[in-house]
Length: 588
Ligand code: PEP
Ligand code: MG
Image 1 (spheres, rainbow, N blue to C red):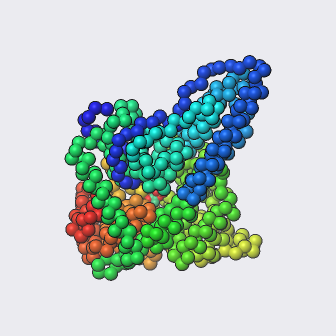
Image 2: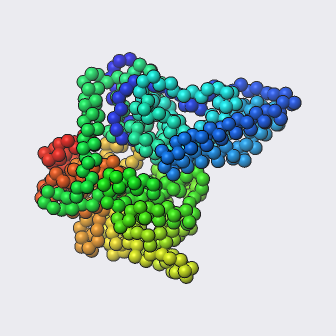
Image 3: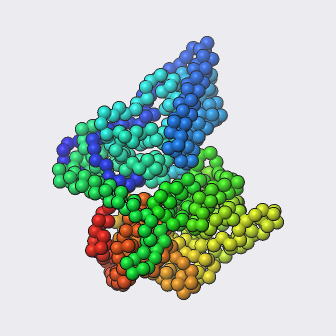
């Protein structure tokens, strides 16, 4: 690629820093196009048998892979293999392939290739990221079948030293097969932070970025050195000696500090003058509780339940949800667990749930709007499962994307109906579950005083609050320069919410990414927020930040930040305070 350093803005999908030589791979399933070969009539049956033998081998490989990886996989990850196994048995796909063999005398390879392209074409015609992920799964599975048919060795990267994988895309099974002892991280062209590959990378703790420009991927060669910054979302190609050294130092210091902070999980998160803050965890699957607890989380502040609804093997029914929520509540014991009802919409799209497409889904029938006005059936089932599970612990339920009092009134009415129904059916349920609203729209923040009449708590989702306040798509990197949670406009909305909540005597938590940033967290604490919820690995960092400052300092910081006219000023002030009291946390 030439030796000139390039520093490229990409999308961070899994945190950490990786530095190393490139291993450039084309996708595992991008096997050579099979020839449009035909077979003689008398060979049709043996061709069909050959197809079934390859399907069987693939099935065994996938089952073996799932059981070897067994304990390493979360339920969600095992679900990916289950979904691949289901695709192997898909009647529609199989019938289509057999039809090409029987009627058009195509070879099995060519028949598979035609059917795969046909179904991918159908998926791709619908602008739905969920279906696009399914297309990737289909390619993954049929690629394997093809490899077994041709008995070709699947193009697995051979790694003699630890490398950074640079690929056009990685499928879930490719990602999970990456050997963590040989792979340092990866950079891909496509795949959002909610793609299966991103979910797996985070659970494997591999730094990763996506959004790699195609022309960069094209030019990268095995001798190129790259740095992946999975926190800031940067890819540095052929760094100069100074940059490389700076990143190496940063990575080493980060590792050392993270070990040290990991030994402080028992310390109370309180300011030097005794203001206590509860630090909770954000999770997407009940199985992640153990990790949260290890990081010192006091309960769960946000369980994003929509991921359960995005699995390929259909929607979870009441019983499956009840078991999942109950398992989580039992693991948490007396600690609070806040479960958010289904937040499908915007970037979190599910073909299972949607019956329509929208031009602008972020401003469409998302979250509570979808639950109340389009999929009340799913919402009712979820509420039933939640209230039944509620007897097993300290459950709080909150609804996302609230923008009006009317929505809360309708929710409360539905809750009343669901509880009556459960009572009539003689099913055990909890009527003491607290009910909260997420504050994610400027409308909700500005009407917080009115909303407070209908809820027991607020939880501020800064990711969306910023998106809707600044009018920027949170996935669009072109406008990411405006994506600042600590801008004066957003801070004023948060402050207003806190004041309204205080007046009504209800607690306010923050569960957006802002809470996970040690400097920004000081602004939240200074505004009097008593619960911060974040991805588990951030908890030790935020604990140290809070323990380093006084509430007096944090309040002074907020006073100055709220007077700022420049969008960058509040964060600069927060970083100055952190720099003074806990410089080790800056840029971690
Ligand atoms: C948020 O918007 O800040 C939030 C926590 O919800 P999500 O990121 O799932 O939209
Ligand atoms: Mg949100």
